[in-house]
Length: 122
Picture (cartoon, helix red, strand yellow):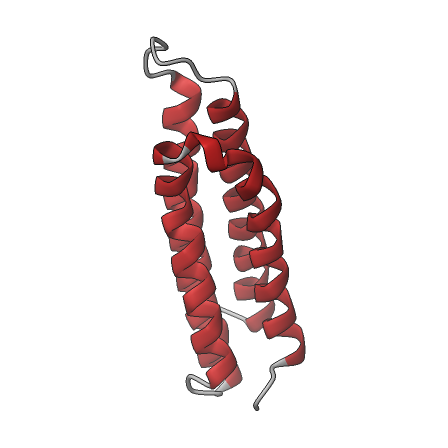
């Protein structure tokens, strides 16, 4: 597969990830203790997991195509990936933090983009 194909899959994964996270935050803001599990929450959870796999696999594929090994900026992106993966648990278990996460999660995405674009430290 070409580098551009990996990049396209990576960006699709990012779009799916933030769609899922946004849906979960909005769902949490309107949640009530008596509300049953809904299809939207399950769909967002599944989308979150699929997105994380797409991002991880395509990211490592792109790195392999570039022949860069695993530089420091890539390790930092893995850290951001872990935080974005864990954020679904934070959204579900800390409903009071949903508004903060609404603003924090895109900043994490921006950090990941900055790392990929500028590749600090080589």
